[in-house]
Amino acid sequence: MLADLPEQSPDALLALIKMYAADPRKEKIDLGVGVYRTDDGATPVFAAVKGAERDLVERQDSKAYLGPEGCMDFVRCLMPIILGDDMAKSDRIDGMQTPGGTGGVRLAVALAQAAGAKRVWMGTPSWPNHAQILKDIGMEAATFNHAADGATDMDALKDAIAKADAGDAFLLHGCCHNPTGIDYTVDQWHEIAAIIAEKGILPILDLAYQGLGEGLDEDAQGVRIVMKAVPEALLAYSCDKNFGLYRDRVGAVYVQAAEADHLPRIMSNAASFARATWSMPPDHGGSVVREIVADDTLRGEWLDELAGMRRRMLQVRARLAEAGTAGSVDLTPLAQQHGLFAMLPLDKDQIQALRKDHAVYMAGSGRINIAGLTLGNIDRFIAALAKVSG
Image (cartoon, rainbow, N blue to C red; front, side, top):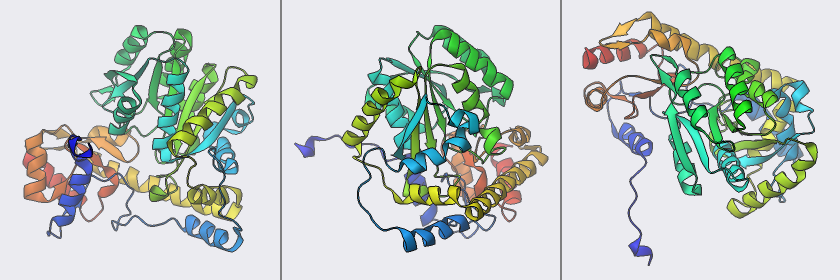
């Protein structure tokens, strides 16, 4: 019976990782893997994380189960950071811990489906796992174009909302759009919030990179604007990037209910889905985040480290934009984009030539990880780009 299972295509990014690792060239450049890197090419553990882990080793007195909702102190300590002080006090909002932002998205979609949503609309291109999660859960995916000519395609979004039925869900990236780096402006978020509220659409907000764009509050503006405008919303959150806790799988899902007395019933469904899917989330990373946020010294250290990451990515974007064009590729829009990722208009042959002739590894879609570029390799990358696209 098991032998009858069809073979699945290997994950393209995992295949790219293997190809990069096998390449013996010392000058090779990895722009594929979506992790932050320093100018030395390292992905270090945050000093604040190390400090919190030392504290936990000394003080944690049990590894007993916490239940499907995970560590609620972790869930609630993030709420002022994500939602702001006032909204964090709302009796209409509650949450639970999930295994990474992926778990948060999956749980949010499952709740939307159970509540009656038949379709989830999302802008494309999007994080590839969004479509995979929808397919696995059995939700219809409807798409619209996210960006055009280096800016968000608001006409496509508004057309999609006009076509949507009341009760449909819309999946929106909160900031640092993956894979384009192209975000909605504050004015656009207000417009989006108003028309979503008027149409009766359920927003599913994916906030996976808070603090890596313009700042913690700035990166959360879109989420806050939408949640203030609508009666109900779902929010998936990830600590993987902004705390550097990739392998610890640290995330959360938040629910905003139309009325406070609806929350216990909604969260009971969330707990039931979690119990059947992963039973309960891993605690270590959530406890680390809780320790950092609660301790003034560790929190200050984390904020400094996060600001340093943000500055470095902005410097890389500025340097790329200064180059103007590399062959046929206009790099100037990258200065106005945010976060780890950007899309370059390259075809498969050009991407293959970058890999074969210049040891530059990127996703087949043209997505690059900005943090894979350093002061030591950025000029070489620009020159390689000019050669393959000229």
